[in-house]
Image (cartoon, rainbow, N blue to C red; front, side):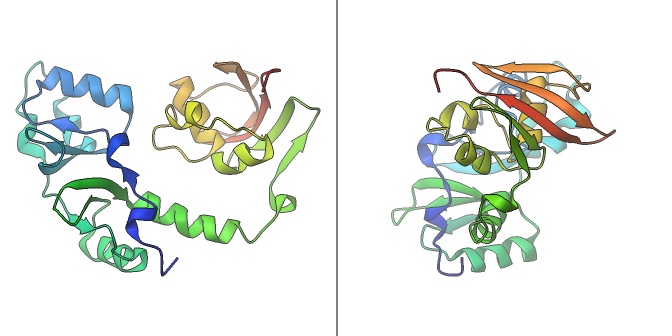
Length: 225
């Protein structure tokens, strides 16, 4: 982890969701609903000119308005080079109390973005890689049906279920990293016990839950997987 460059874990330029500074307030709200991120880079002209970061929580007092000068809420962007070591960046994030940095290349162009969650995932991933599937909490019922603990990471789910095309999940997961988080994301509300949530050709059934957590989720894979 200590020797990992920021470039290795960043979200690359082509995958960045960002807002243009001249967008109307209604357009901004629509885009936020569609993509689901909580911190969003803002640019002028093109993505190489990032001028700030919009925190969605700063917008909350104003979302009922039809018009609002949302650009007044953007925060100062934090830029880091591609070769910044992750352990150094983690320290800077903690010291400055920030959650997102814009990664720039040697010419000052935008190469990608990196979040605190990306760094933590890298750390946790390093730890998780030391364990095998015996440490994962899941039951394989048959070739197509599994019951997973809700806090199982999506990456572990892909591995266990031998899912080769992760993109369909990655594009819909928002900021969720666990199966429970993904189900909440696609359901759009907190589901009930026994509720069926369908996503593409996958079926998710909530087997057990408490007031705030999805504890066990049964997943049925598509037959053609």
